[in-house]
Image (tube, rainbow, N blue to C red; front, side, top):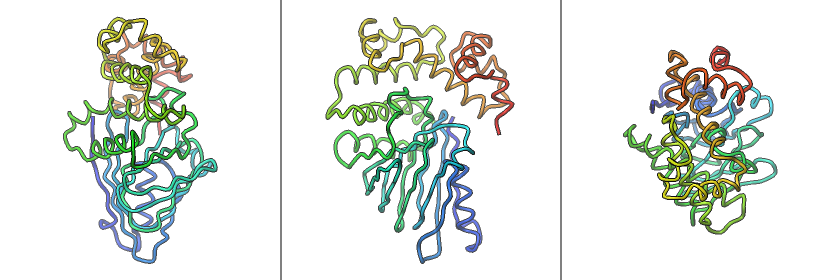
Length: 308
């Protein structure tokens, strides 16, 4: 479900503008410490939508510095990759000793579980895609601190796709495109971390498999035969394509189903556990309970009760 909303410093007194802004970005992105760095009166606007657990934010703002510290990381119970697509102006992103200089058409990926710093020297706009790490295999989510993709090649195509998705106002279309967006990001991170100049056939096949699984998670009959048929591959090719991740098809399906259950438990607290199980693709509440406890170390009911 996509729930768009927007906030602007025009809605508050000028003296309260930056404090209001800092509160909004902490609530809709992640907890950070921010300060205005420009001489002109500060102004900012953020348009945010939540789409199946993925946050899509369009930010237009003035000069500022944003810092995420270890103390602030401790306030966020969830772990994300933050994909910053620069659409106007310039910025610097620093994490783990790496620096990413961004201009229009470029993007950087940050890890919310590690400290970082963002600097914006003047007016800018960005699309920020907040992706739960649980939606990506551990291999794709590892080593991405301040990874930069310039305005050429695959990175540009992915940046344009993500920016277009954030602008789209048709919830049904956006929901249908979301698995492709996550799959494209996963493939791009894969190429970057492996140092590959172009995707291999195995990478492309793995991307198709992951997209198909995400699109059909709610089907409790999803198995290797269904995935192979849906992706135009043999069962052996499916298993071989996933082998590089060190994650079996069964583990992939279970991880993504638990991730969807987490999102439903967080965002739809009124749903009975049986309904959560059905929407996440589990055969019933008991199956959800076993898989969730094995993955998260707690039960679905306890997880929901302990949410802030």
